[in-house]
Amino acid sequence: MTKRLLALCLVLAMAAAGCAPALIGAGAAGGYKVGTDERTVGQMWDDSAITARVKTALIGDKRIKARKIDVDTLEQVVALTGMVGSEAEAEIAVTVAGRVSYVRDVKNFLQVGSKSVGQSIDDKVIWSKIKGKLIREKGIRSLNVDVDVNKGVVTVTGTVVTADQKAKILGIARKTAGVVNVFDNILVQEK
Image (tube, rainbow, N blue to C red; front, top):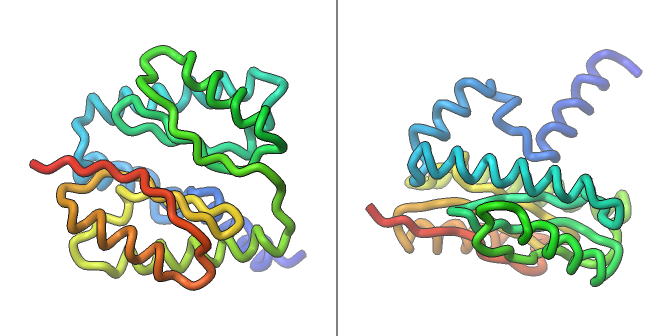
């Protein structure tokens, strides 16, 4: 495999894994995120700590394929997205996440089943289209919006300051080709 092809694969894998800030410089993106996120630094820190503890708890439970589950936390409310093998596994994941200290609630956006390679590629294309539109949309802080796509089902997570911003984000996701459904996990924190 040539070095260019290997580098391209690495960049695509990072983007697909939600590591866009790593692509543009973790320090710069992190500074931008802290400076633009509607939550206080304390809330962001607390939510990050909860996310880490939930991921650790999921990894520690052998009944769960934790690598296929994404965890997002907003104001101590955990959202689980991704693919699981059964309803029982989804219920276990929700229970495990709910037992973590300081978790107020758990939103279950998990899907039962598996994805083919083609579906995974389609999901990455949908993700790229949505993120690209969010970056170009005036008044939207795209780094404050996390987009997860599984078999065409999009979960949008983040904080905004107005209901209009939330409506724009959800509209972009819903109008994107290939999207089957959109789960709303956006918190409006009007100033």
